[in-house]
Image 1 (tube, rainbow, N blue to C red):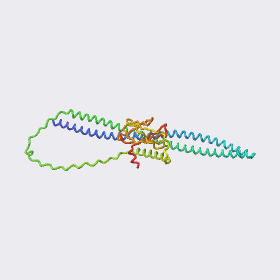
Image 2: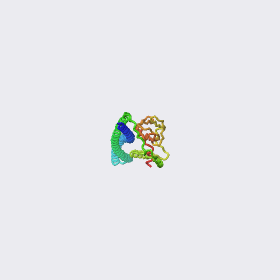
Image 3: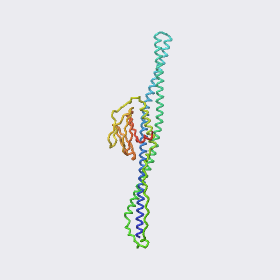
Image 4: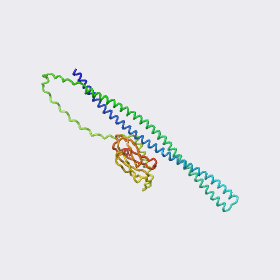
Length: 340
């Protein structure tokens, strides 16, 4: 009976060890999936910023299109009036040609030519704005589809994380039960030591020396995994910034709305932005993991930072061209090395 109880105790201990190993592996898997979820949330936030930017541009171009169409309508009305005035001047000059009618005819022809040119230029303006507006409509549709797809991916990943959390809770309960079984197991009787035999009294051959353990291999630096969507986002934002700043002439800075612009991370010291030109401002600063609120002057921006980016330096680009709805672009600095 003592042997059976000892076996049960050993079995419970083995279960406890395997349960502990399962918890470690489960926790590692859960952490990886939570980090993946945070990355997805970060990408979704970038999509939302892009969608908001397109919507704002759409509003601006709706206003531009309305103004352009109104200007074209006025130009056409002026064209019709100048055409009527030209025909009247031609009739007057034909009926009674003199220096006055000739001067009036010349003036009417000039006014007609200017009115015709005005219609052409305003018509081209309307076409340009309509073309840009059409491109924005396409971008808006693509951006909305991207947000919807990202939302579906987020929901799926959140469901996976929730499933892993529930599995971890089950394993924790099983581990607690195993520990209780070990604690509640009765004491094992001391085993009976047999009498020594002649064979046991014979000299024992010396143990062969064991080979020295090989030195542990040097740790291999694991390359950080970068989401392809994040890589494309950073590439697009860098190209946008380079194109915008490339429009400046040498020595120019472009518009600068703020002489002083400060980033105030939650629970961290304030950091001043550097002015790049064209109302673009940049700063590089370490971030903290979790849902963060970044205050820039009077604006607040909320972002999600994955746990494996805790303490990592991020690039912050503040786009202040539209003060009613400024943009904050931010991404890990280490992504830039993948773009070269």
